[in-house]
Figure 1: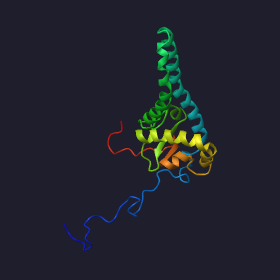
Figure 2: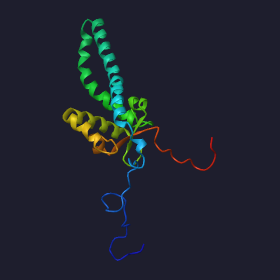
Figure 3: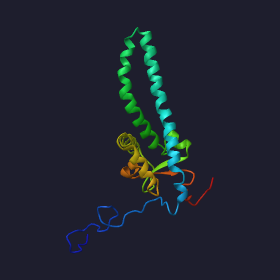
Figure 4: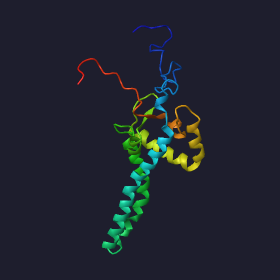
Amino acid sequence: MSDNGSGYSGSTTGTTWRSGGPTQPPAFDPWRQPELFRGVLTRRVFAFLIDLVVISIPVILAVIFIAVFGLVTLGLGWGLFWLVSPATVIWPILYYGMSLGGPHSATVGMRMMDLQMRTFSGTPSYFVLGCAHAVLFWASVSFLTPLVLIVGLLNGRRRLLHDLVLGTVVINRAAQPRMAQPAGRSY
């Protein structure tokens, strides 16, 4: 181990924001790749509406089941209605976490609209990020509805307020650049 005289034998160059060194550039540039962001906001609205239907179907089925179960048990089953409120909070968070953190990095609505969520550096989303995305989305829509939509119109990547906070970006999946295939067999 050599001593460079400074009392520090580790590396002085870093790539994190704390080290002051060079940071990794964003993976998706709206000026070089405008096709990644073309029509994203409009399709996000339709994807959101599709996801609302997908989220509400199990909740509606659970309410119908509890109502019928209450009739069969002469009213005793209706005591399960208290589970509906927590389930309507937990189910969407799990839905977004599993679908955005899954192999497609997209919810059912986003897949139908050919969208995909990535981190700002281009890596796929993961479960905790998907859950946080859902919580911040619903919180921002509840408190700042006009601001959330205006922010998306004012930036080149068409990111909404919760995307900016979490460091995510939603892109057109079909326009995404494909990864280079390794040399070897092409089957």
